[in-house]
Length: 541
Image 1 (cartoon, rainbow, N blue to C red):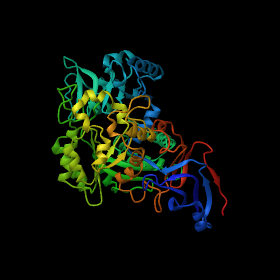
Image 2 (cartoon, helix red, strand yellow):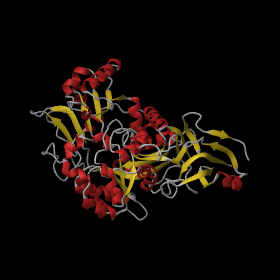
Image 3 (cartoon, rainbow, N blue to C red):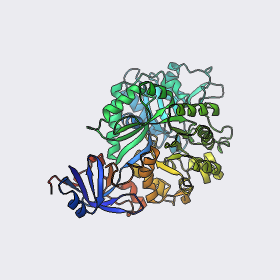
Image 4 (tube, rainbow, N blue to C red):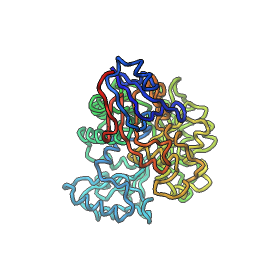
């Protein structure tokens, strides 16, 4: 017995503007689309209930192609600094947090961004000491490629003037070599190793909080990288299968597997694509470089505003090639974090030397700074580019200072990527950026923050709304090889729908961030409903 969905506008995404009148779903799969009357005639004896959309608009379910789901839950649970607009306000929030902290408790904050401050202030450890003299403190920058730590945290980690920079990381120091408390990329691990281990119950709470929030945003799924940070691969994987059990919670989840736990995964008898109907193991994740905010993204030429550095290679080219070979040994595709153009060049060198097996695609995550020669190389490879449209809202205009005007033609160039015929998927990189897919769609089309009153940064790179929605539907499906069962509304595809109160193709672009989620549907099940936005008739016909 199945369900008939009708009474609204239904965009199939099979082609731009294509709609159908109704959809019949059985056992979580779309059986057929068509007119309401034709489906009533054909499936009269199988329709158990009819859901009237009441004029709302149905799309294929939006899927975030790159995020950190547990991290998103942590952001919701912890001190959120992502909206702080001044150093003074950040200090006030930290002071209040310390007042309520237990004796010796770590003070942990998420998402600060000095580029939001008029003075671009980055706190020194001694300033943090004044705020929390008796509490170790770790404050994660918005990019998650840098942290601030106070003296107590540095002491616990035994970081001193004599501590060398770890490979792939930087300990920022003053003029006499003393650590300032600002640690970049792999130097962060020196602090994280001495923090109290998180409990399984905490991870479960963070994941539960995240999934419940994500479905309220209209997301039916997400591709996430969490398996190397929360008590090991097995505990984290088990937490995912416990929380997203297909009964109490349904959410299409693809788990990228950090290269450090790939061996553990296989020792547990698990392989790429294994899992459940809602959880599948994906590509091997590798970080090739850092981020532009902390100037650790690896560029082929020095930073415009800091010519003494070109960024940080997390791995040497030889190590990166060895890691890709490791993935191929396990018959896995790779997902490589590449923000700078030199990091992307290294990644392409590695995957060209060890091609992915037939039928699979590698993923190149972010691709913020590219070059024309690299686009040509990518066009000849089975790769998907995992882009984050909201980076434009977060990184402009300061990123122009970082890169210089000459490089901007090939930076955050989403339209250029599509024009070169490259497959692109849309993600948020939450908790680094907001998880709301409507903000991602808006930024891809508007190239600015909703509050800004200009035509957009480099407006020639704007996507159409259809192209932007396609990133979060068809694009996300291509990223995990699910384009034959996800990303469009058609017979044989998963009954995963995002239902909005507004028609994204008919409202103005400036109204997109204000659009409301009426319902989120996964596997034919309503997993989120805002209000009485649809009417259900349980009677048979």
